[in-house]
Image 1 (cartoon, chains in turn purple, yellow):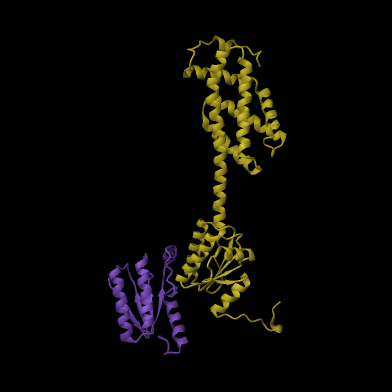
Image 2 (cartoon, one colour):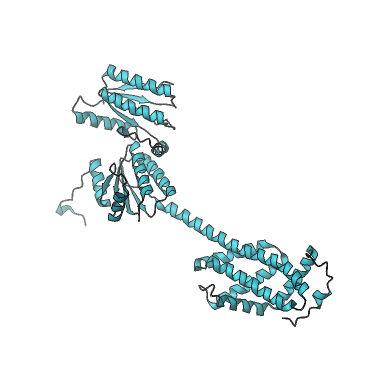
Amino acid sequence: MQVPILKQGDYLIASIQAALTDADLLELRDELAARVGRYRSRGIIVDVTALDVMDSFAVRTLRSIAQMLKLRGAETVIVGIPPDVAFAMVQLGLTLPGVATALDLEEGLVYLDEQTKAKGGRHGGR
Amino acid sequence: MSDKPKHSLAKQPLIGIGRPVAEDIAMLLRELVSHLRQNRTQLREEWARRITEAELLTAMSKDEIFAEATSVYDNYVEVLESGSVEALEAYARNLSERIIPRGVETHEVVGIVLLLRDVLARSLFAKYQADFALLNRVLDAYEPAANRIANTVAVGFVQERERIIRQQQEAIRELSTPVLQVRERLLILPIIGVIDPQRARQLTEQLLRGIRANRAKVVVMDITGVPAIDANVANYLVQTVDASRLMGATVIVTGLSSEIAQTLVTIGVDLSKMNTVGDLQGGIEEAELLLGYKVVPVPQGEVRT
């Protein structure tokens, strides 16, 4: 199952719709890395609202996505982690250190606007 | 008691010497019950006296003890007669409901029932002392029934106690974790009382739901009311903070008393990731700052009274 990636101004939005296999996650990572270069994006939002399970591989991949894209010059924010998933993740010790998180898509956009403004780069994506 | 005519029992055919058969037991119990009915006043008084002597039921007055003793006695005799424990169970529950709030302890309840058993056994000794074989058979019939009664009352009492404890735990649990919104996107979570694993879990779940429902960005968690903290509790706090962050909310912890701060430093819990402020007021001010609020006093002339 492929993850649709939408371009929205300076940002890319990847909205995960259903449970992903490990291969799907790796594909998402590569696709995002490629598109960040192609569109010269400044921020990426990964929306995981529809995920009801988050295993260690998924968490590690999300983290590596954030770190890779940082090296390619873009900020990543993970949005929409459901309460139960957040609790389960914490109990497993998967706390996504160093990765920005936000409540939902809207909050993620606000966060990216703040980040890009703070850097004094081009204007925000909206 | 011993002057009571014995002929009714003596006339019955004796069936064997060993264990009495069921009919024999029933007959002996009938005999027993009529004996207990006849000597009701005397035995009851004797029992009440022994209770006072043993300093049981100190929470109740003498009259109350006597009234209670009377009804227990009557129930006891009835159960001996009918062999139905249900009525006694109901009575034991009812009795427990009445006396538990008055601070009657388990050992007292068990104690009085055992005393009654002893008082009645004594009266049987006195009555049948002339005929040892008969006494033996009467006791064979009496003891299992009496023990069953003692058991029922004790179990009923303990069950009632446990029910009350469960009820109270439930009530405490429901009261314990309000998540309150004090400003747009700002929640406070005042924690009062001891945090145990179950409560910590419930607390975190409620907070996470609250964050989602109120779209909160900042949470002030006030632990002024938490009496003590250990490594486990500190760990729960860290987990709660981390989980909230995953949902995009910042947690500010307030109200760490000097004792708690000292304990945390002594046991070496790493709370460096946590945002802590001295008191609730400071926490709310800090949260307002994070949310971009600025509280400004209204100029003198415009104060509404």
